[in-house]
Length: 403
Ligand SMILES: Nc1ncnc2c1ncn2[C@@H]1O[C@H](COP(=O)(O)OP(=O)(O)OP(=O)(O)O)[C@@H](O)[C@H]1O
Image 1 (cartoon, helix red, strand yellow):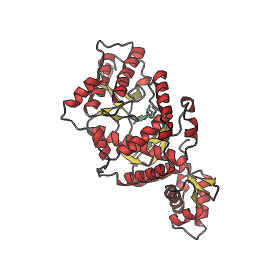
Image 2: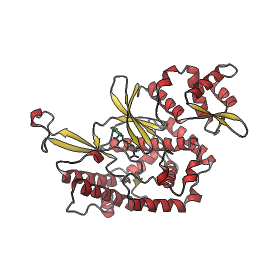
Image 3: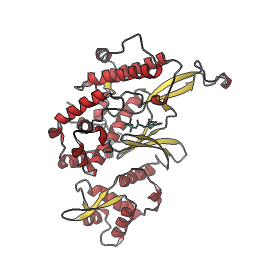
Image 4: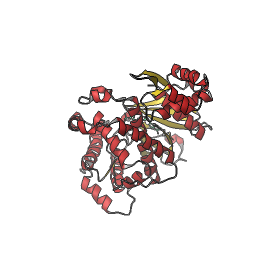
């Protein structure tokens, strides 16, 4: 679905209250009865509630659902988008929404501006929008999920991305600046660069290759494995070597430095994760394979191994970011829930070969029974996340399940 902001300026204060009420009601009702919407919004009795409900339904921010027992409404992704945008507007994080610049498998990327006209990136997570082609085993499971459970998973993905981006940025990793997070979305700085995937040649592949391998190892030294390190998730920023250099020298091989920027880490895991070694090797091999195919570059060295990664970690002296993120907003419980989902959709990264995809599908198959989250779990989860989101600023949560 597309983000269509046309209707946003026509919503009245009452419409916003009703939209918020539908969201709140969704926490424990898959279909929110009209009477509950009226009650939560505090607009009881007047014709206002009904007018707002019909306004919101007309522009698809809520949708009418006929239940066996009663009729009611559910929030749509459009409604959730509007609520997030309204929060950003109040926080002065986003003033206007511009063009869509990216469509990921499960996200939409927009350029937005703040009040001063500074451009930023709004990333909207849309889990559940997977390509059913790639999902063999769990097709029915996925189709039968309620929209609320997708929204919940999308929130988890946004919280994960924001928490990791903050931790990485704080430790001088080249990632966009995380600016704000709300619901299923994040706002980050705009990187003026192309994905590695779109780059047909580089002046010095050996240097870029070494930079990328060093980044994989440096992540490990902080306790992290990326898990999806590939040409889609790395932007290549080219900067003149000497900012004051004479422009007439042009941008030949000596005139630019090449900075890889990591923009996406949907599968980042701890180096202590049971599959850490597999993820690590896959990251290394992804880059090797890409450099060979695209730049016909083969390194003399075999590339870092998982024991190199472990050795980096045991040098010590650095923070354990895998532990830090758990304490600062993305708990182990949230990680597990998101991982379950990833297992279901076989969402194992852009850079994977068919073979490993097949393997993952088989693994997901075996786990089907056990991994079906109940409605209760989903509801509890929604509450957890709302709490997390409310608490997010400035508080390092003591997670009870860090052990
Ligand atoms: N901060 C940013 N600055 C500039 N461009 C960005 C930024 N973030 C994302 N993009 C653009 O949007 C595209 C998709 O972004 P991203 O990889 O984060 O989405 P995704 O849904 O995770 O994609 P997929 O799962 O298909 O890899 C990127 O390839 C890039 O071109």
